[in-house]
Length: 181
Image (cartoon, rainbow, N blue to C red):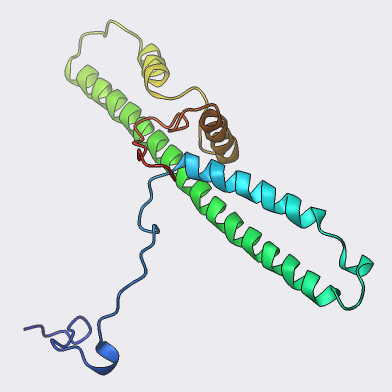
């Protein structure tokens, strides 16, 4: 039995303690989906074009204004929800890029630390310069354009790659679901 009343739940669920089904969402899944982001962007552009093509309310007769205003607000609300989804997907792409860059930087730091430890233990002069070793590690491990500080450019580059037909958008190690979004 549990002593802590905060974490103990009654065994029989009655009244306000009834079990409820939670809504199925993809909030827990932080795997980026560049294809989904590209599709949201396309849909958002179409929606914005429809909104901008609507006749201004001031040019409509008085009887038609409320209906037109309501329609425009409905479209604007949908556009707002799409922008939120797009921002969430873009943030997942940024997170993927930043965490990958972090892992690679950590690898370079640990490799150079090992090199320093070996040189300290082995008192004979090393065959290569430490600067050359560090530059070689950075060149082999890190990507040419950094993600940190340039996340918008990174997301745009991923979207360009996805638009050209690469389902991963160039995200290294990403497994893309085979089903259509």
